[in-house]
Length: 394
Image 1 (cartoon, rainbow, N blue to C red):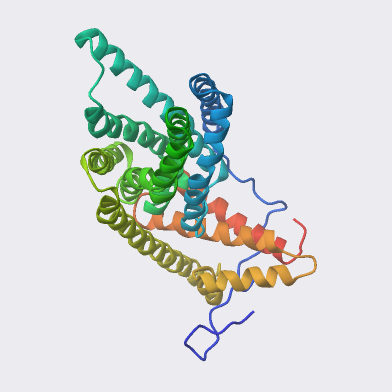
Image 2 (image 1 turned 135 degrees about the horizontal axis):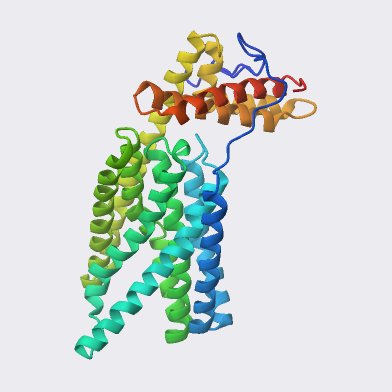
């Protein structure tokens, strides 16, 4: 399993899946993995029910055939975004239920909130002024404000009810991007369907290129401000103080959304707009993401070295767990075993990484009793993972 580090003649760090000091704790079965309590089933169920209502509304407004066409086309930018989210989330993957909730909140609840507010504004304007709302005002003020608040609330709910899975800005970015991906998916269905009805295939093609290919990450970049702010707040504060971080990130998200919509509304050259506004924002987001991912690796190494000093890990294991090359080597070893032990090694990597971030919360003074319990549980899980890798029965 030893692999040379690129540019070096010395063997690189490896992940040793064998036993290490203080490995086998006195337990006869692997400890149960914590779920999300009642929040996961209730939250996902509510979002699904709202989603059914949104689908029914779209089917009535667009027609079944147009809805199907719009949905198929909307899968293209959705796939692009979700692949990017998966890349960001590879180091410390978030639980699937949380990602499903984030996506459904964006695709259903956030869209429903935006539709209800939009209908309310139109009715109020028609009643008060006997006229419809100003389209520019809707694009630059109403849409950014309502949509970012609706999406941001989903990220805030995940922080509130899944605190143990919300360790920092990368987690916030992943959840925010997933919420935004869901929102953009549903919104694209509406835009694609409306374009097909109003302008036929030519209008649909132009709309697809602009929204599906040129700017699939627009909503992600806006809502990422909220997620990053909550993630930064998670590392710096406890209790109600997170609301200030949420509001700060939300203000940035609204401002960025308003800038983008305002540019689209008043610009005369869409290509120049894309190059001068969207591309620099996207490049900046990539740089921030890369920096944050490197920070995650550093935290993993530093905190697992704490455990290594106490005998929980071998130093080489820590280096392997804290490097992409080491993880790849471990998984390659696991796939070569008979029978393969890929699942066991993946669990070991995931539990060790969560342990590192839990320890980070403890040493930075952000831990409560639940975090301390999480640490004990994760140490037990790491021990159980080792026994599974070694082929021992629980």
